[in-house]
Length: 99
Image 1 (cartoon, helix red, strand yellow):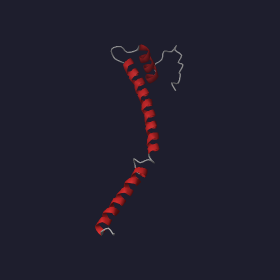
Image 2 (cartoon, one colour):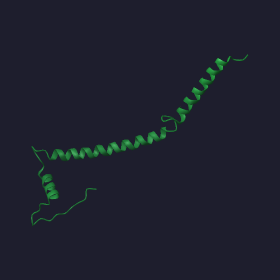
Image 3 (tube, one colour):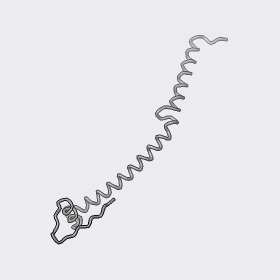
């Protein structure tokens, strides 16, 4: 027995929809092929967040040391000497890179 033309159209539409969904599941923006790329990007961003968090904590520590109520005299002296170039004639400056 042959299916009526209307039934054939429904089946063809369902087949097209199934093929489209399968293609999206494999090669779409959230499909199987992009899973590894997304995982690698996540690992990179996690490393960036860890580095930025460490840098933020170091800056927060320096800000706390420069608190107006109890500034660390060594840090204040270091900043004045470095930024303003204030030195006594009898001082010797030895610089150490922080890298």
